[in-house]
Length: 126
Length: 378
Image (cartoon, rainbow over all chains, first blue to last red; front, side):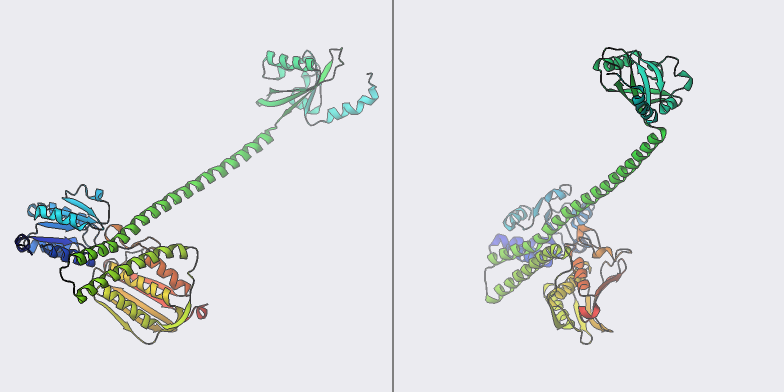
C-alpha cells in the first residue's frame, strides 16, 4: 500500500448506506482495498445515528430503496443540517438516476455498479 | 281494352278493404273518392267536394304538382314522400300512385298513402329508447373494461420495473464480488471459497426470482401441477430455515418442530411456499428476530412464521396475497410482490390454507395449514 493510500485511509472515511447486506459488505471490502476506511449502515435512520455520533465522512454512498428511512428521506434530512448538508453524496441505486435530479448529489450510479468510476469520483472528494 | 263493370267489382271491393289509405285522384290532383282507411285520414265531408290533394298535405303546391306530373307522364306507378296533415299535426307518409287511366284519356288513378300510426311511432320510439339504453350500458361496460385494461397494463409495467430492479440487486452483488476477487492481493483457498459461496448465494437468489417469474405464468392458468411424495414438513422447514440463516447471518432466525408432521405433498412446491413466507417475514421484519414453528393440529400439519416487523394494516390481510401486492409502499422494499401469491396457490392446491394475522407496526404471523394429503382433504 503506498503512502498516499495510507494517508487517505487514516483520515478519510466513506459511509455506505445500503440495505442489501451483501452489497454493502462487499462494497466496503472493495473500498478498504482501495485505501479508504468504510463504515456501513443498513438504512437512512442508522446512517443519521452514525453521523450524529462520529466524525463526518468525506463521502456518503447512498442507496435509494431501503426500509425504515429510504435514500430520499435521508438526503432530505441531511440537507436540513448545515454540517451534514455539505457532505458529498453519491447515489448508487437500481432505479433511474433521473429520480435523484432534485437531491443535489455529486453523482448517481446505476447498479450493477462501475467500481472504477465510483472510486475515481470518491478520490475527487476524499 | 273494355272493362266489364261486373268484373271490376271484386277489385273495387279489394281496394275498399285495403288497410292503407287509398284515394281516387284525377290527373289534375282532385280527390274524388277514398276507401275507409282513407276516409279515416280526412274529414268525411271533404270527399266528393272536389277537394285537392294539395290541401291535404303540407307539401308545397309545386311539389304535389311535380309528383302528379311524374305520375301522369310515366303512365305507371311512382312513389314519393309527402307530409300529411292530421288533427295532431303533420305526419311523414309514403305516397304510392298507380295510373289507372287509359293511354289516351286523362282519367283518374289510385293514390295509396301509407303513414305510421301513432302507436307504431310510439312503439318505434320505445324500441329506439331500448336500443339506446342497451348502447349506453355497452358504453359503460366498455369503459369499465378499458379502465381495467389500463390498470392491468400499468400493473404489468410496474411489475416489469420491479422485476428488473430485483434482478439488478443480486446481479450487482455478483458484479461487486467479482470486482473484489480481482482486487484481492492474496487469494488463499479459504478466501476464494468464501467469495465463491457469496457468488453461489446470489445465483440461488437470481434463480429463485426467475422461478417466481415463470410461476406467474404457469400458475395463472390454474392450479400448479403437483408431484406428490411422502415427507416430513418439520425436516423440510428446518432445511429452508437453515438456507435462509446462511443468506441472512445478521437476522436471528429460529425454528422449532413440535411432533412429526408427515404427509404426502409436493416437496418442491411446499419448499417454495415455506420459503416465500419466510422471505416475506425477513423482508418486512425490520431485521428483528423471525421464529418458525412446525406443529400438528388435529390432522393438519402447520408452519407458523412470526416476525416483529411492519405488521399488516387493517383490511390488508387478504390483499397481500394478491399478485404484485406489497404490504407497504413500493419505495422501500425489495421483492416482486409474488411470493405470497404463489405460496397461497401452492397451499390451496394441496387443499390447505394460509392465514395472515397481525396489526400495523406489531409484526405478523403467517400460518400454513396442510391436510396430510390432498386426497384426504377432498
